[in-house]
Length: 260
Figure 1 (cartoon, rainbow, N blue to C red):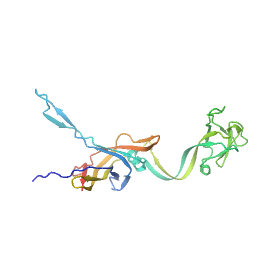
Figure 2 (cartoon, rainbow, N blue to C red):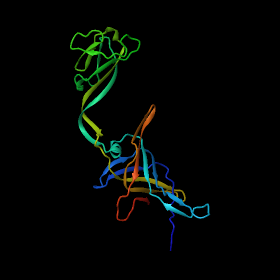
Figure 3 (cartoon, rainbow, N blue to C red):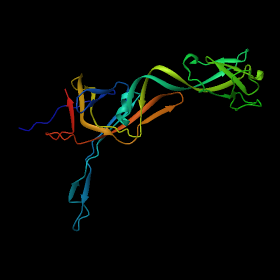
Figure 4 (cartoon, one colour):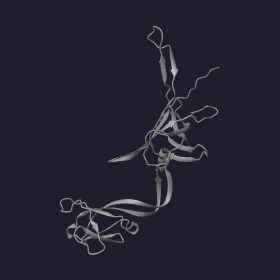
C-alpha cells in the first residue's frame, strides 16, 4: 500500500558543508562559517501548443541546471582551491608589504620586516601633503643623502631632508617570509569536480524535536565567479557557485537528501 512521507521540518540555522575528492573520498575542504547556502533544483519544462486551444496540451522536459551557492564568512584556502584549482604550498616566500611611517627626530624610520626585507626592493614616497616634495619617489643613495634622497641599512632608512622630520612617508617593499601559506593561480590552472555534502539540523514542530538532515550532491564543479567581497566596517564575505553534474553512477543518483 502506498505511503506518504511524514517528514516536514524547519531549518533554523545554516548547515556546515564539506567537499570530497571524487577519487580518494578524502575531505578537501570544510566550511563551518557559512553565512548562506542555496541549492537550486530546477524542473524546467517547455509548453507545447497545438490546435485551437489557447492552453498547452503537453510539457516537454528540459535539461536540468541545478546549482549550489555558498557564502562563507572566512576566506578558506580550500574554498579557493575548489573554485579555481589553485595550488597550495607551504614554505618560504617573497611577500610584498606596504607601510606608512612618521619620520622620527633623528630623520629615520625602521621597517617592520627590517630583518627579512629583500635588498633594494623598497620604494619610498613622501605621503604628507603640502610639502614641496609631496608625492615624490625618493632616491636611494649609498651615503650622505641630500634632499629627496635616503640611505638604508638593515631596514633602517635615514633621510637627507630635515624637513621630513615629523612627516609621513609610505614605503613599498618585499620581504622573505620563512613560513607562508600560498595559493597560486597559474595560466594552466583548472578546477575540478568534487562531492558536496551539507550537514544540518532541523526541527519538527509537531514532535518538538531536532533531527539531522544531510544533503549529498555526488558531483559538483565551480561555475561562474569566485568572489572575495571586502567592504569597510563589514566582515569579509566570499561566495562560490557550483554546478551540479551527472556523476555517472550506476544508480543514476545526482542528489540525495537525508532526513534522520
